[in-house]
Length: 306
Image (cartoon, rainbow, N blue to C red; front, side, top):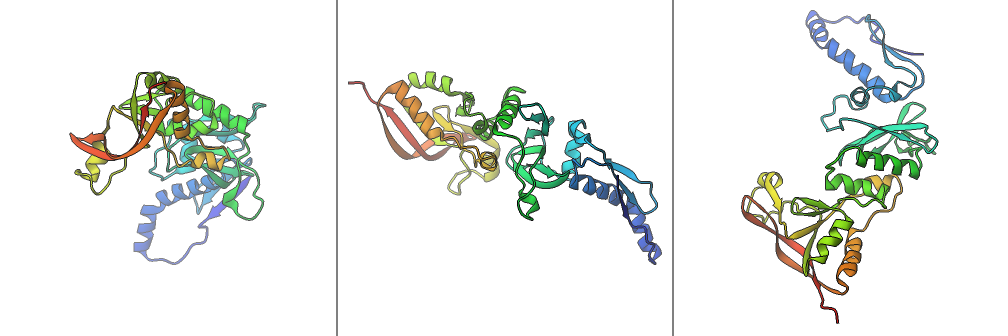
């Protein structure tokens, strides 16, 4: 068992200072306990915190990270953070079934916590939760590498994708490199998401297609405000939007990225045979409250078979 003591020495302070300390003490006590638990979230010994004359409080017990409710584990890891975390976590297990983490997809600004020997030792981008890591090869405590194998990550990614319907394109694009053989709905036409098979069927019916990579960002020349753009942009149903991702998750786990332009052109050859490619910098890719938003797009035109 580990016991941490804080504030046991009495100091000479004014009555006003004492009142202020008394007002803030419950918040400080709780915050300090959360800090301790967050530093050693998977420690395999009991950790108790005693602050001044208060009773000691257990903040970590051996193996409790494996069975805590998701909201309690996430609270231990991210107490005080305002960033969104997933509602649930899925087990990350190796091929023999050993539990190596509990995580969920969380988007661009969140990181899962890596631990070694129970202590924080690194992070994994785009995820939330906790993953066991290897020991660092040097003194850089925050650069530990995760223990799970590629097969374990693929199994978790597929389970996460299958756990709920309606994942958005960004989530699917981030997870796709972990399970590249899955046919995921990462292409967008209007409000509809298509997978590779559905995209091929759609291309069969087209003689030309304009393509934009990613989602348009606000530009100074747009005739709308940034707030309106971010809130009300609607994609043009005649434009095919390819997924884009920074690829932070794939890079951190040493998975190859996916080139969606290459995939699209392969699908075009299968559906059309030969085609011509050009660029047009004045194509309406969507609108904001009826005002056209124009951007540079790549245009593909089907050629007649000889």
